[in-house]
Image 1 (cartoon, helix red, strand yellow):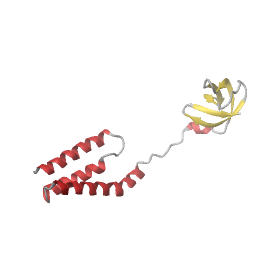
Image 2: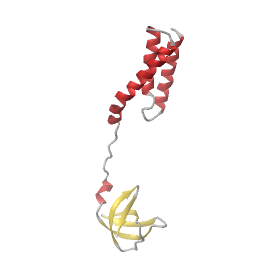
Image 3: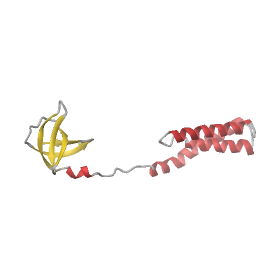
Image 4: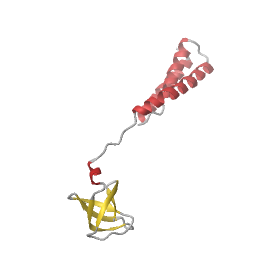
Length: 141
């Protein structure tokens, strides 16, 4: 095995390790380019500049043609949760809602939720749940 082919095998292994260590597809395209360059260096010519050109071309083509397909397949769709069922429902404030201190609680559908609002709302008032941010229900009068 010549030195150029060995170099590209080492590059491919390093890029493969990097790919395994990351949650996203980061270096797989370049790993493919390095593998093709190693094959070219071993079977066709051991000229470094030829294998560098092959690496650039193959990596670019892999990025252009396969990344959109992979990106579409890896798209994670948001799954609705049971918390969505309280959206738009009326609730009773059971602990004063103070937007400055970011405290307050409501009771909706028999459940107690931490709540927040743009304005202070006193205990006993009726509110409507407009959205959910994290573990807090966002309410309006």
